[in-house]
Image 1 (cartoon, rainbow over the protein chains, first blue to last red):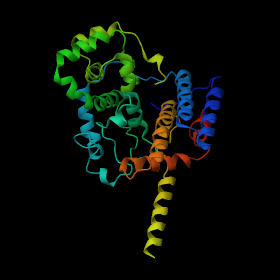
Image 2 (image 1 turned 120 degrees about the horizontal axis):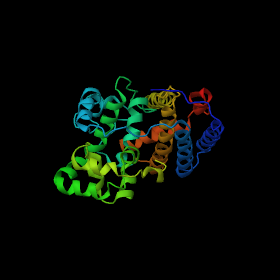
Image 3 (image 1 turned 30 degrees about the vertical axis):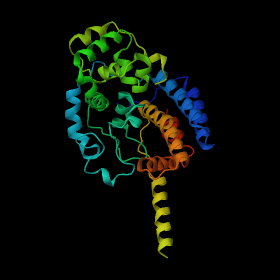
Image 4 (image 1 turned 135 degrees about the vertical axis):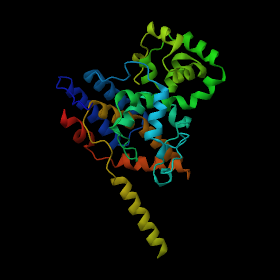
Length: 220
Length: 85
């Protein structure tokens, strides 16, 4: 999984971008400056290394729920609200997957990376024993939780919402874009809920086959 | 005296937090991308939280994160990622 970065002539560019980032953090630059510099460097790394930002097939959210139960509940809690039995001893506390202020900016790709790499400065350590497929499943599961209620309110409406934009939004987008970015792309919260809770079955799948990759418009 | 001990303990805790090793130890492309994502988004949150200066627990956590980011070793990116290219 952890392949080393290949030797290419583009590496000096990455080095320059990360040096710039280092300087910005040191001089306590504005969040916008640091954020933009980080996104530029990230885009360059992804371009050079062809790092996959999405699974090859739609993850099974039910499987993700099982993986979550086996690996995540101690800290994040059975209800995924960050209230696991170990949570009180952790600083910063584990994330609640229902916390909009934290979740709006996350994507399954970021959650996938957090699981496989860990999160600096927190108790979130890398979980290496889970396969890529299962990691995607639990990442999609975590991202689906706060959308479940809306999607379940009216399944037909959720499916119609999905189909209405499915030719514009691809699996790669759903994996790599945050909820905020999906909202900007696809419209309503119901659309986002239908994408986040979709588990790769029925009519949705057919619509996906003709879809286009939208994520190129974003820096993720 | 009690105040002195309390301040001392607080400083010690802060230092322990600040010196806590960052979790990323590998040099894979994914690790670097993750680090850049983390820095790009959480730096913003950390700075915002510091400016708001609240007793709220999550805000305090973000403030701690800001301290860590400010004390980020200068060559962290290079030591962990770039020099291993």
